[in-house]
Image 1 (cartoon, rainbow, N blue to C red):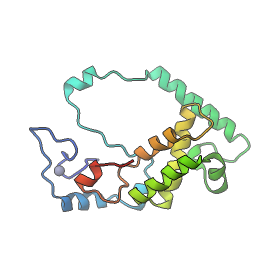
Image 2: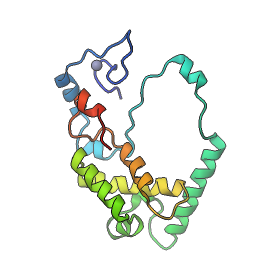
Image 3: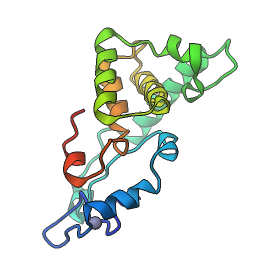
Length: 173
Ligand SMILES: [Zn+2]
């Protein structure tokens, strides 16, 4: 989706500036906020890029390497859930979620602080843990560490309490 009705919010260039009022943006985004937004796992702000940058940009991981990572993560999850009735981290809930997404004290503090700042719902809380678990699996890490959690939190960029241009730009997480 566009970040605002005109589509230039957060992607302004000298030639194109966002002309939307804060109120207009708030109204536009409120159409998909709340419970629906909670159900979207990954939310990422994608900046506008120039044609030249597309050509210059070389991916850090090749498709082959990505495929190997995904296969590794799948393998870990198959092993993790071999005696369970679920197959994917995304299906974790309740006791199993707690068991497989244990956080260190530092990670717990980071998550708590993020919640206060972002004003996230309980549903978003579970989702972040599950995404962090998958990021750790992609990393081949048995522990759910702070970098995994921090990356998962990055994917909730639409959850911030206020969607006004200035406050959204200063992400504290
Ligand atoms: Zn705009």
